[in-house]
Length: 163
Length: 191
Image 1: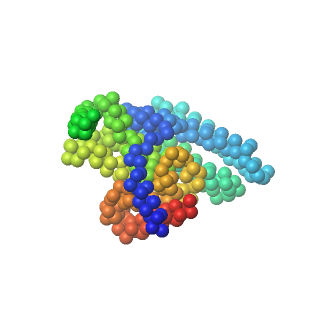
Image 2: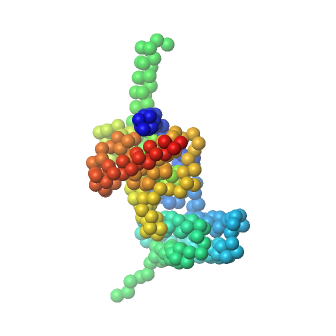
């Protein structure tokens, strides 16, 4: 035990002060600075939009349907349905982004919410890939995708209140 | 080269670096992005190391690092030189990374009802092969335990300061630290 504590202490004393990231982070920082954004949700070294992220996930699922060893016929069917769901969602997001490309967002922090929704979506996909027949997860995924669409609509086309 | 001359040369180099940094800070705070990029390059390694140790994954560390520098750009005019720039930057990095973790835990906890679980083995496997032993083990710790361990054992903060930063009690901070140390000791023992 003393040797292990000593080993840990040695590691702490000799820990590297600096580490280098694999990706070039400057483009994302520069973009955020020049566009007055608080967050680097849109970065140049990652998918630039929710749409691109959705397409990537769809492609990944498609690959897994082909490559996943030990998949049953039902799993494969569900995974294929998941891929179609994702492609449809990507199409919906693309349509909205084309419609709204000339508009300004109605409030500035919407990207934080969108990022949270994307991360939740990614977590649900990961969970569904492991448990494709989980209807509760699938329902949650649909709700998250609906929230993404609703957020875009709310930010770029808020309803006018009527008196 | 005689020792006295070498020391004098190294001292002169340190002074030159400090003057250089001061000039860059002055220029960057006036909106000079070129100067800011140089400051970024000079400090990226330390900021990223801290973010990686606190967040536990390269993906989150990169995003948190970007947030740090965007915040630095905005707040640079408020840096008046009361402390060294690296101290000021380090404190800002710590707070930004902690705030980042707080925001990114929310959805995971709500959606998957996980509370402070250890990350997946695949995430741990992301670590570069040339990382030291501690940097390879830290991502395996549960999030809160990892943050407390990093803040106390590596950053040198007292538990009272950690409690304030993480919005937990001092007692909870100590519990998390003990948990982290126990896990690290166990993993090292089984290597």
